[in-house]
Length: 174
Image 1 (cartoon, helix red, strand yellow):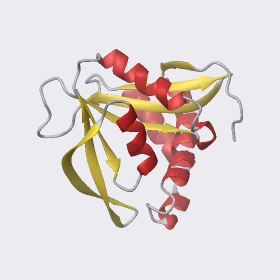
Image 2: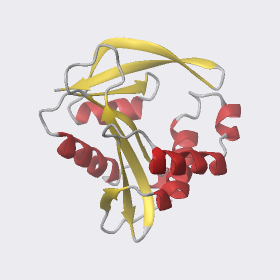
Image 3: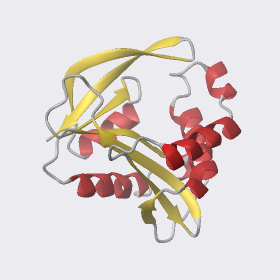
C-alpha cells in the first residue's frame, strides 16, 4: 500500500516496463474485480505470462497509433493506460478508444488515474471522440469515467471472462 506519492511522471511505456505493467495489471484486476470476475480466474493470472505478452505488445504491437503510457514515482510504475483507434464497428470518424487504464491498488485515490487519463485525453485532443468499455459492476471505474466527461451511450455487450459472461457498458466522450 502506498501512503504517500511524490511527484508522478507520465511517460510512454517501453519494453523495459513490461514486467512492472504486468504486475500492476494483475494486482489491479485482483482487487478491482474481486466479487465480479470468478475468484479462480483472478488467482490464475500469471505475472510471467502477462509480462511476456506486454513485452511483445510494446515491442511489436500494432503500429496504427496505439499508445501506452506509464505513471511512475521514484522509479516505480504505479499504473498504465493504453489507447488507440476505436475497435467498434459503429465508431465515429477519428474516434479513439481507451483500451485499458489500471493502477496499483495502493495508489487509488491519489490522483494517478486522473493524471493518466488527462495525458491520454490531451494527446488525443480534447475534441477527439473517445470511447471505452467498462464492466457494469465496476462502480468505482464507472464513477471515475463519469467525472472525466464520459457517459454510457446505451450499448452493452457480454464478455466472457474466466468462464463467466459479464456485462460491459460502453462509455463515450465528445
